[in-house]
Length: 356
Image (cartoon, rainbow, N blue to C red; front, side, top):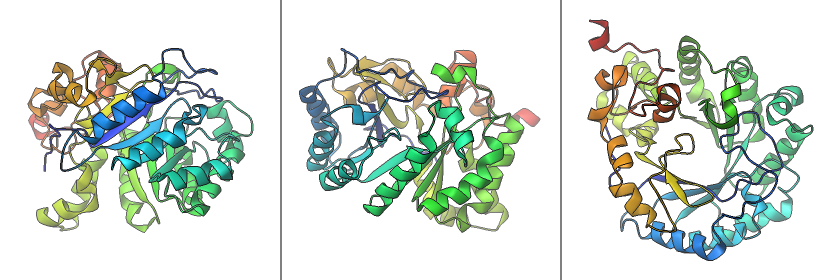
């Protein structure tokens, strides 16, 4: 049940700008109030989209336009329409501010956006606004969510999981369901950017949380995914095996679509200045789209090729029977030790080779 994405990434996360009106405590991008002078212009963005659209004749990458706040760019709707016209799946991850108007949502819908995502890090205004550091952000988020759902655009809710937010997840799940979200993505903190100041969840608590999610996922009216916690797949597979589900049925299950995807293996990140990295949380630069085709960078750079090599994983990840479908968070390994092929310190699983 392993997967290597050699030819092209499955998902491209593209930071169109670092400009944002929020000051989130965990911001990977260390966002700023104004757009930077080194951002790619519209013509350069169109060129990159054309290159991504011709990456493979079979399956085109899905592109997520993010930031900062991509709504800070006045060409956002145009870029969504342009990418859609090339046959790319296009999603948008705006900041939850008053800029997410009905008119903007309608324009993105008309341009062909496939999904939109919003961050919701607390079930109450006090909890959420403490993370976002802007009073009123909780209300803006609920209003934006209602507008997106009303427009018929699938909504993804992103939730940061830290020691401070862990205890609120049950209430958040109820709120996500009430909002009509299609997907709930749990982002497990990686200590980069402003996130270095926050306290991550402990490995044992992470295991408990992921097992709680796996037990309840089938009953929730939305799909659940994790970011930087690929060992959720191991937990789901273990629970399915314990329930008597066959290996073939596991391979056919919806979660199997994510098997193997991790930083650099199925994932590529493009920064506002064109730098290409394995993910936004693993800010090692393999090239720049101003100079090279992003697909070539993904296929040919030593950094990406090594990240796709499961045999090069170190520590517990290197001897784990689940490394093919999981592989651990490469970003967290790098943030913790400086070795992006090291073991993921958030995973509590002890492989048999280690136990012996």
